[in-house]
Image (tube, rainbow, N blue to C red; front, side):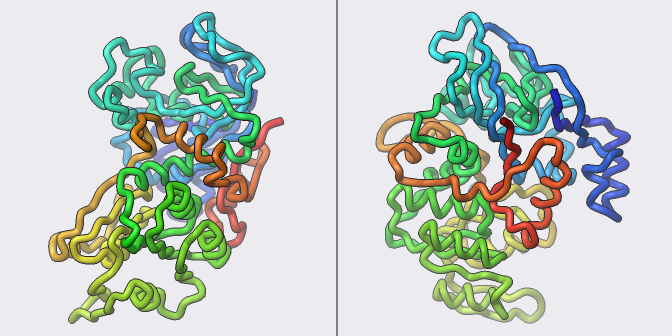
Length: 408
């Protein structure tokens, strides 16, 4: 079968790093570490696993960051090469292990990709998995499969950027008939927003600022409204099409940098803040939002997010930040801001019951508290993976909100 893989070899890494200074195509061209090639279908690692035929596999911002080699090499021990991309996966079960009773061949499923203690069949789960913080698992390099945070980063499981992959029975979430595959493939992105919203839920009297209106930023707005928040929600968007989507999902106000002569002042005015000019350097804001969700991960966005957080407020880092340069950390101590990180998804408590982010997202879809399918704006064949990457790199031209690979 065809699969888009990351080879993880040092020569290709060094070539892409060097040539990438001149052309971005060096990161996914013929000499890069990203290749489309024929591979064998992955085998079931144990009798507790199943094989899934991919229907949709999303293209995540983390995939693009990895392709562009933005991730720190310090994370490389937690993956195994070569791996097939694709952790945002839904499809149809085509094989089940001998110890799998509750899942049947032909079933439509969504797959929670995190390869924590349970899927790795660790006999004594770590302290994080015991309390439901699966994304913080201590055993990402142990167990029945090779190292990897998730399906799509592990050489033994395959990934959704191919026709088939394997998953542990504990990762399988059967899809109700009224949840479409188009909704299902958005669950991972929505969960990456639902997780920080649940753990940093605002008071109804709060003003929330969402920095960034890509699929994660819009999903933060959607999650706030799906969970019943009546907080005031302000969104900082880059493109007009993103601004329209943010409003449609429940944002009270949107500032679009491409349509603003001075987005900094416009945003400060909406938040009731006062712009102050220091002796030299970037402007600062007196006042701001009670709670800021930073959903971009760029140095500029992080720096702005800190400046637009009011004294004593909270800033949640949702975006995929790696080597943030030029960020002025002064507001943290000067304004006594609390900064929290949020990594992916995990165990959650909702209305007094324990669940997981993925399962709660499916419940919200089933209850019609949220609809996600319209965020899937582009689909590609796996053979067109380079065109798909380029569309995600140039969203102003392509108007991509969420893209996925589609399989028959």
